[in-house]
Image 1 (cartoon, rainbow, N blue to C red):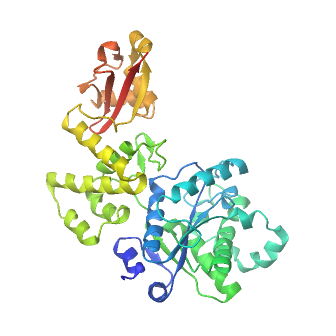
Image 2: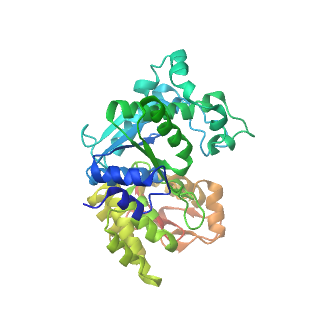
Length: 410
């Protein structure tokens, strides 16, 4: 069997590694336990978290054991990495409820049976800590001068870094120590912005247990156009189908920039690299085929095969200009009484989520990107009425590729 570290590296998951020889050797000679932390500050993960899930899934597929840490304890502090100001505090009840939903989501990507894979809340040890004991036993191993060299802290010194947030690195490092002691975890993975925290955890294990622990980070992803991965004009692309439907999820991948297709196929599918390399050689109009494979495989992983099949049919139907089957397109209901009065196009586009706001809808009209039943809308005061209902519905389109089916009902 191919070394799991080499698989991760070949697919682009490795940007920094504490000790490459040690990590590769561990994957070759033993069953590695590795973890990634997930922040439960929302009730769903999003596409930005998908890279973490895929990395852990590859680890399990290679015969090793992944641990997903639900950071409901560290979320009480807030990770300052990449933030310009302190996060808004959430209640313990909110964080706990979010963590439960996120645990269910993670279980769609790899087994959490307690043996092959685990999901653990770090509140189980962090919230019970005695402050003075923790400072004496753990805090003594941390240098303030060294902590301040971490990018997450340096970038906040001008705008202000709270003492609460300053403790984040210590508590995350302590997570790694606890996981080593309780589960034999010797590897932490995460994005490049977590490098300082990962190093701190590995160093804490070395100091307390005189043991080897390592870390791997992957690059912080942006699209070829410079946008943050998983962000669209309408907002985040969520893994919860109630927040981002399988069709919208599928369309997100169809809309991938040509320059991103190859690396996204490597990151977000389990296709063999030989097949990915063949798809990556497609040029011009043929690259649409590679995008469709990416969209289908990514949707199948997150939402299962039936939803991916339906999204693909709906997408092909919409782009083919046929009205035969748009059942997979996001839809909502609107009353006939409302349609009789007439509804402003800008209002309904914002209401169904095709645009983030009415102002954005107006700008999209001015740019020529708003369609009702495939007809371009030019006037800002245009309305949708009962006369626009075709076979019980009105088809809305934002730009070239985002559809919504508005079903008329009594």
